[in-house]
Image (cartoon, rainbow, N blue to C red; front, side, top):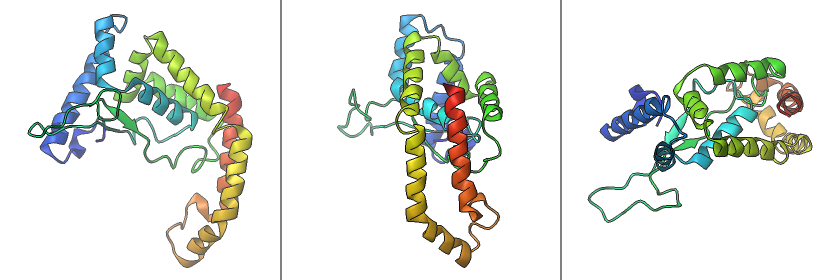
Length: 219
């Protein structure tokens, strides 16, 4: 489901779930999460670890087409007429989870001229101005355990998958394995016409530079 856009719901079940989720987000925007009863309600409604990891990934990859766009959520529903039940400690527990989706404006991919401190300022602006997703994040930050979880996820990404040498090695290997394929597409179709990827070097170079500057800013 698109988390905040009920107009994109296609079935009666999706409409009902959109209303339920949006109602939860409206409630949490003013809820006192120092109250353990309220916190337990949150933990029973969304997967906290998933949300922290999702938010850390979107943040660190500097996705400029998010969070006011490209937000998707999902949860498992069982059929009341069947013998299926929700299963704790699994993806079948009925909690809301966030799905990484449409990240082509991240890592400087389509915006190689917009990274560094400009991108950092844009990200902070996005966090401070309300929409459903950022309001949920700000509400959860009332709890120290969530803040620690989010920070730990960001630091883990900085020092593993987004560590600068790993990013450079990955881009180098992509050049080796995908350059010929991309060149073929450019020469034999107009799918990539006018896109950043008409110049493969600009694309990979922009990603590498964006990652280098963003690592220092976040650190």
